[in-house]
Length: 511
Image (tube, rainbow, N blue to C red; front, side, top):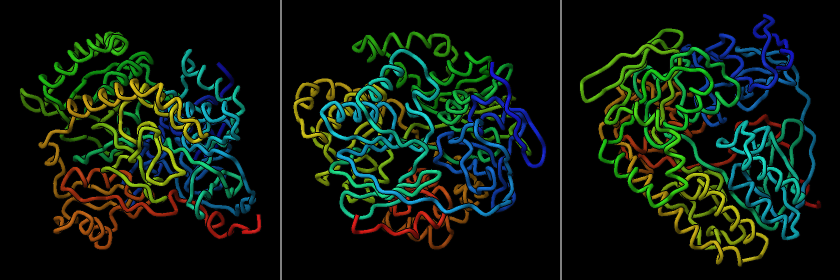
């Protein structure tokens, strides 16, 4: 194990694992609340991937840095209150390439390698500091390493730790890296923006150490110390089993594993795996967790003060209060089509609409992976390979991979049917339950929707500020859409909170 790195946290020196993400290391060291909400409530990391903005802290004098996206290495001082210093403006530079790929998960890696192998200058952009997305975060397995090696061998240029801010016109995007503002020009764009987790409000869900399922997975992969910890996992979908396996492998004790779907639905899904031997084999690896799975069970309350102490589950036999140190709660994934929508692409619900070439409704934009519909790694790899080749002007892979693509789309539909959130979850939030975590807006403060879902969402924002905080509705938007049908799909630039210099430095049209 490498030497711990000494970092000053709120004026006190602590030693942290330099290999860990800053969010994981801070929680492991006992710093459970990384910020205070509008009403002064303690808040900790939730999504683990930079979407919820609950882990905003001050790093080396720079406010509003997301701790889950930063590694311990390279950080010196951390503050959980706003203490700023003068920050030098970012430098400005231009970037010109043939194919720009946004998102470095499986779909993005496959797309970038596919385009670059066809002789196109390809640039791959991701907010995280490493490649692999959430599924391959900190993964050094054979497949994930091979995919990373493919990208490097193909000559793909990497821009990690970099966010998309806004479009600058056709075939141009403004990007923000930590030290530079980048005006990118390209011939084709591939969106591999993945998905976010569906987090539904219930009493106590804002307590520190109540994470999303995927959030707990990301924090565990990022170095969260779990040995001897009691963990409750609740929600829906195959991710439950994967997270159980990960946290147990790191020494945690899963004291409850609750699936909201019915036993009949889970059994039908399991039987369907017999037609997919590779996925069946993967499922058999979770045999221990499957045996412990409680179906028809879901969380109704998180109990604690400054942090989580217990989770209350509703089960067929009544409510059960289970003491725990950490909880992972998530109800599936939601395609992330925000950038596609801002660029004018048509969406089907929240999915980016694509054709057989993975081309969106804007001719120079292609999309692949979870943003076109949640279906897992295999779907993402197939679509990424097609999208990268199509963006490079080669339609042949779309024909060769058509059958594999159809098979993965059918599997994605099975997942959606089997694990769709049940109607009872709409009643979890009490009148005083916070729905919008950024602005501390409660269920009672959000009026019943009007005649139009779009009008209802606009009215909600105007009257309550729900959806207008740092996450821009990434968490409460999908939740409210599930709860009462508000169509929270009005993404607009800037797509990520940035300092003013990233907006104020205007592009030089002569470049």
